Image (tube, rainbow, N blue to C red; front, top):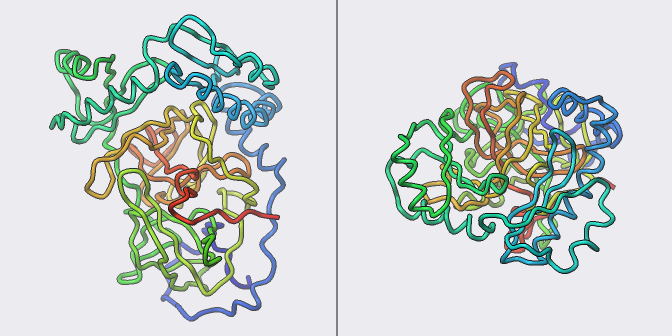
Length: 404
């Protein structure tokens, strides 16, 4: 194999112990990117996982995943029609596949019919929601501001489907305490006891190792470019170690140089440049995929997405909320901006941090954290990611590299 394939998460070598060789390979003889599967093949691969999750045929799963992006963009646009009344939108998978839009009040916002008329699938419009999305975010803020010690290890989120606040973590709460928190929030509160949320970067063999002691730490995700300097590199999670080396194969390992990072209340990423060529590809667990698009929109509840991590490999789930308040934000209180995913076959564990979240050839984000009791299918209660829209925000001067 010639040269490097940064961002494709090649796992051939990471289970083999070998001395670190950080000598720089030539950047003039990297060769062409590895052959990547087509968009149709990528959709089919994700559709097979979707079909298993929801008990539909693979052709039906393909049809749904092809409609997801357009349906999602329509749902994302409706909030602007009546922002103070908007109570959420999502994609429903069962008993049938459709979009759902919710508003407070009893009258449809002006322009709604024209906006949804070209939807590839049916969209239900629900009125008289008990509270708006803005009111739910205010309820979450009231709970967070209280500083209750019982909530120290609990993530919290806005659930637009049930119009409530959900608390997730290892701490059981009594009915009396839950009722009290609902009074504080001025909204219903639901408690789910799940394994404690952790930043997934401490176990197993990985393609990113610490330079100081060769310990494995994290997973690479997508290739990135600084829009000002045009320097290219690779993304991983900000909570990973700063001094890392990249493992391509038993014979190819080299140091990478950190160029920037954010690990704070609303973002968790860092990027590194190398002496090699970075390609707009990623490894999905069984094949290389080109990055053809990014998903910058925020309203994506119900989207079916997949991830790859060096410990658990490839697995998929459904976005539950885009307003999850994580517990791992570098010592500061997290903002409710993290994306949370669940799935009956979802897997997550230490070492997956920084890995890519995607649907077909569209990049969604980087893995931030998870709550897992093991590494098997369904043992991951949930996983969270930092959205690509946030990483490509105007203050970061970064953009994902896209394949031609």
